[in-house]
Image (cartoon, rainbow, N blue to C red):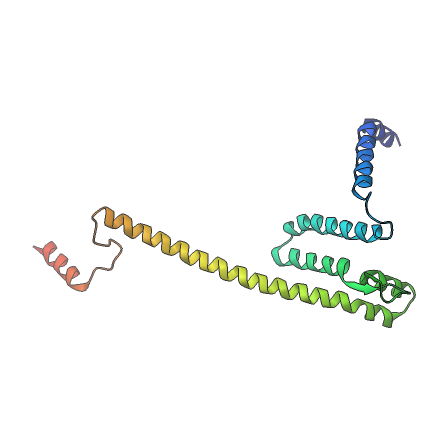
Length: 185
């Protein structure tokens, strides 16, 4: 317990409390004009966006396809639309309905409420697949144009140096025969 006491004593509690106070003041100014009925939705969407942005940092450390797939799954779980429990016209996250149905041991309701999550996930994975195809095509095109530019630059340098014979060109057979005859003389 001494380590905990020394840890608490070494923490700058005044600075932390000032920082938290500033965050609370900033938040209260930010939501001052928001109606109280809309505040939970704004807080949910804002929090979900923050979670997705933070997960983007984690996904960059994961292998390339796995990071994107986990980001799409997290997006689907957070933003798939569902309906509120008692009011079908009110939109709520589908993940909440799935958790509620599982807690009530309603397997059919959990599967039904999980369908929007699966649809959003499938759409996100399809869009990611299309994005990777386009990105690969663009990168291949850029590599080809970069190679052509390097070849053009080499040809221009060769012409500028008045070196009209390409040193990389294959020597034809008659030149080889003439070279062999000259060496024998």
